[in-house]
Image (tube, rainbow, N blue to C red):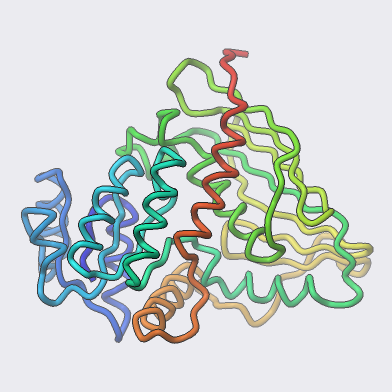
Length: 321
């Protein structure tokens, strides 16, 4: 794997590849020399190179992982396609829907293996959730997505200034998009019924987002806000006729019913879920390269997520409350 972009997500990938028996890092690159030096110091065996071209064209690179801010996704994916490399891209595909449509078409036309990195595509908790929702006695009535961040960007993202900007950052693109993908995976297309998004100043990322979606006749309420105090909340609640499932903190699934109104942990899930999810993602990437069945999101799927997210963000207004 060639890793381009050595911020938090790029670093995580390097660490996870080191634990996986089927992958290794062929090359790693970041536009910031200080970041490259830090990676070389922290991971001495990581083959850091000094240009995008050297990373993409490394003879051992079978797949290019594009882990840079969205503004640069298109140009790097196009370069990877030209080099005949498979692509794993972070979401969203870009910051302009029309350009992303062209990019998805170019990726499809290339015939190369492709995937977009949505955490819920390789989650054991999501697999169990899907099974639970399909049970004849569940009777899905509504879906509620709740996001709360005491600050944005989060503490571990402070170095990523682009996350504070309305053109490519914000928690709707960064976090809510994962849940939009999740609902599309579980239930098919979504329809945006209404939305209200608030930014404090022009050009700033949102601090509040409220929306109502329709999922094949099931109402989906979205509530997201920045401010107040912790702990942060990242949660999706699936409400049935007499029970519910709650997917929280990305990897944890609880089941609620009359006997357990406070919920009980769904058994049989990984004890270290983040690592297990990354390792399953890498397993799925191997299947992708071998033309075997996999659960990864395609560029077309990511485009559908982006179209809905950008429609929601189009309802943005400026207010300092």
